[in-house]
Length: 315
Image (tube, rainbow, N blue to C red):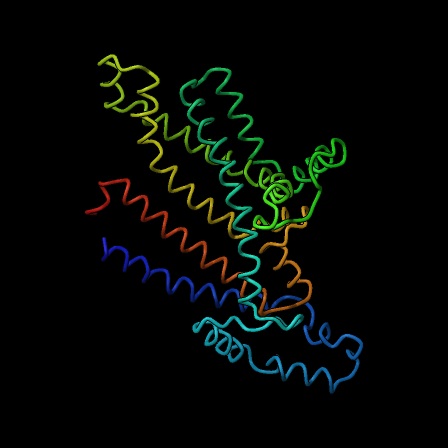
């Protein structure tokens, strides 16, 4: 297993390197001049603009800018925000708990809804309940997050007044208010996760229920509930666990529209504000950090899959 892990890490390094080139190059295609935005009222002064471009290395060739940025990233320095003059690493660490809380709540909602629904859909295959669950899952996958978020704000905040429409309170300051401000965006994101998990759980359960060990358990007179829970579901969850870790990594990568709608100060809002202000170091740092998180989660998913599937350990 150690050799397999080293091979996977060896594949990750060039992937991240190529990704860093893409992040840097695509950002340079964005319209607008950062120097003009930073100059403010002095944007018409060519001396001020030239000074800003020299300070930020915007007057250097792109390959030189990239190598300078990459050399700092390799030692853990993501640079400083051009607009607020704060370390990008500190901004990322400040927003990471917010996105982590939102992603965790969304994932829990997705698992609690998606996995049982997938099991019931497989057990009741081709019955009205199966059709209804599949229709709801298809609706959850197809429905835009921003629309669901707006509808929930109109219902639970404007009409009923049960929950605050926007804002965020840290969990360690006021747990009750923190849950009140994040439950709606978590549900918006969790419905998409639940729909994906439901579809994959159903497919895995349908395959498991046709296996010989399930027919043998039924032939021995084992209760149907035990057959489903202890025999079929345990084996069907192997691919679902792997998918779940990837979905959690996707949630950690940030939900830009959802965070914007509910004014959640996470990764999504940070990168949107940085794009509008042409704050290149923040955009580069956040995108690279989310890529690192997603790659780490994907590697963890592969490790978990190998641990719970003994057939792959000696592959």
